[in-house]
Length: 275
Image (cartoon, rainbow, N blue to C red; front, side, top):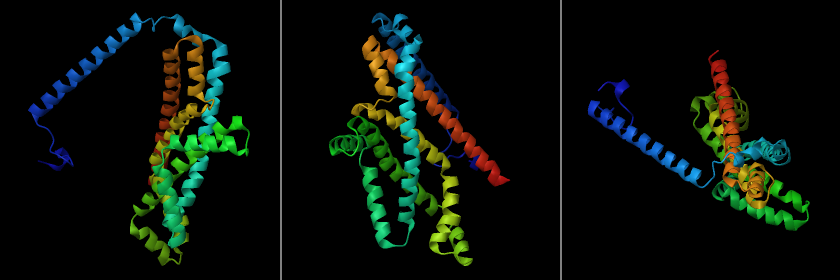
């Protein structure tokens, strides 16, 4: 079998196998459509698709008092967390790449610890600690708990991305830097880190999307973000399903826009590197 028709893991399917795959896909699509129609009929019978349950989202007060303020807090927490996660990841990523055993060991422990702890657990711990510490106003503790929790977890993931990105570079990059008189640290800062950041940009922006989505976990600790305010709308107007659908649609639009931005930046960097 020629190389273009051979997969890395298995041979390309033949005519009979392709026919079976096509039949299975058609059956799966028909089953999905059937389940979707069944679900819609159940919602219709329960009155969940009644127009009056959606009319509330045509009122400007719902948006100005609940959804837009919630969206603003979501974007604010996500934006701050992205910046602080990058700083955290860069510092501890560099720490894991250094030859100093003490700095390397401390950085490794910090990164592995915060990668292992669930982000929601960190938010709950930070919320309780900050609320009882007296360092900040108690009503501000959910916001800080969300930002710090997202920073610690995602910053650790970014640090590991930086470490793996540098290690995946050709060894000749570092050797060339040392050959022209650069130290190990200078080679990292001037040659290796910039190339690694460019190569892992898609993974970085995917992590930014994770930060945006995980900010919704703040509703558990009473953080007035989009999901929390959407649930308030649903509870007050007895249309929880509709409120969650609207909130989900907003998150989908935001994540889609961020993904498109990632694709555009990646293509720009690719074209610039080719030029």
